Amino acid sequence: MTGGRSYNPIVRQVANAKTSNITDCARLFALVSLAAADSYIAVFDAKYTYNFWRPITAIRNADQTGNPATPRDATWLPMSDTPLHPEYPCAHCISAAAVATVLQAVVGDSVGEFMMTSPFAPGITHKWTRLTDYNDEVSNARVYAGFHYRFSTEVGKNMGKQIAELTVATQLLPVRDSAPSTSRKSTR
Image: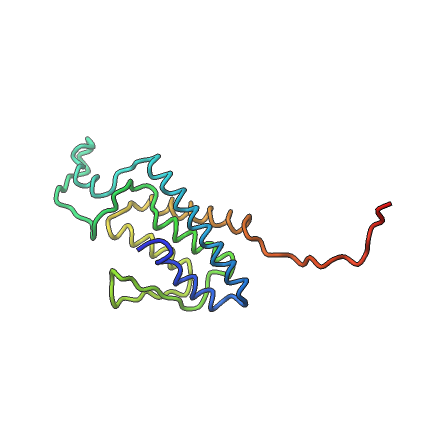
């Protein structure tokens, strides 16, 4: 599960715990949505630029590398169906990092307990108290499932962090007090 279905419940929990009014809450959701959308654009541009093979392809065709230290395992399978697009960089990692970094910039890393369930793992609830831990778990899960290499998850996380930092620094900036000044300049 990816996209808003996976991260909006987390944003909602953080917003309920940490935002003080409807305007702050709306701004938080909007910043997360902007950063996440930009992360998907960036990651798929990169995936089709680098066109890197997935672990399943590398492991099943290791005999074609010319390196005797990488034996072929023609029957190796990841934990689930491998996504049908290039491996590098990790898309789940970039979006999770973009979401987590926006939340961290607005409310901090420690946000109290928040949780997530998945329709693909009924009855299992993941709980965290730090956004960093959520972000790391997403990356680790992609490696453990056999979908990504570690370097791809780290690059994805770094890309997501940079996108979120730019989003928070340049988009939907908080409104400053704009009360009219009591002094007037002469127009003569």
